[in-house]
Length: 95
Image (tube, rainbow, N blue to C red):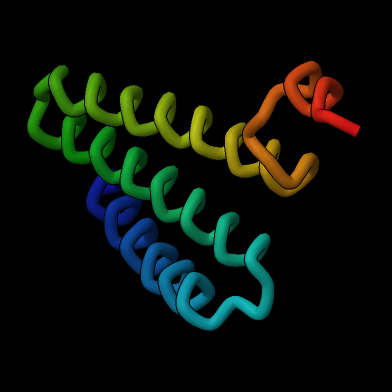
């Protein structure tokens, strides 16, 4: 019963995050909403795995979280530096 309540709550939060993803005033708001949707989908995968007593859902949830972490770091690097290039590659640009 608790698992079903967690799934319903995650679905409701996903719908709210989708509204924020579409109507976010800034790009940072949209990135945070997309990250939240990925995290909530991983939570739903884990809850369904508990409900079905299947360990493969936990693997899928962990893979989703790892991917979300890597994508989040890449997007934050672009926001901070404005490029994916390494600092040394930018330092050698011709004058």
